[in-house]
Length: 269
Image: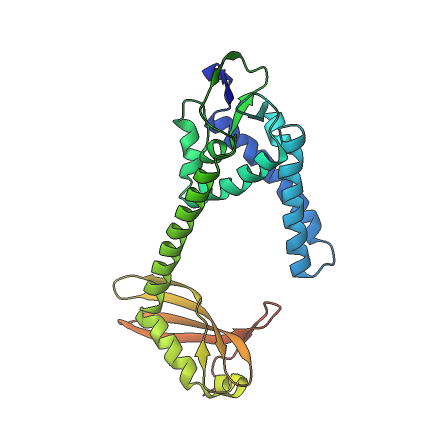
């Protein structure tokens, strides 16, 4: 398979691509803001935003090789053989860009050091980002059966999943093992108002969300926990402050299916 080699200055560099993505982000933000004013259900609105994002990214890049942001910065995406990138390449590139982002952004930072200014997702999809009027130096044969590196894509996807599982698993373990979280579960179990709403036995969801900030003698914590029983399920919010080395609950309530918060502080006492 042939690979086109360009003059080094003909590739789109890190900062040029960053500014192009920034412009695209502004344009998509404007589009999402317009959509948010429409009288739509939140789930439908979310799906519509995803459709708009995919149509923007895949549509522009597969048809002209450039989004409006890329066009403004005078760069475009091409296959490494010099041809226009295919829809398949653009889709693989878009999916792979998630891996480049999730691994602490290293896939994008790679652009600054790579001789061909390729990100990880460029290497996987078999693409270059070149400037307008890029200077073609030569063409060479490479021992790669296809433009898209399927095995690399699978490996990066698997490695990214392992890293994310380890990160979120470790974060979840740290939160659940904290004194504040244990006190929150104990408070919920013994709260008569919670038992009245969800019944018994009380069960806790596997993936609570929360935030804990602690200094030497003070701190704050907030947890959002899914709680269920034989009568139903609710989302409980507990807030704590650490005073004199001890966690004390300051606020307690629930969140309904529409995201509204109802304060129950003091009602169960």
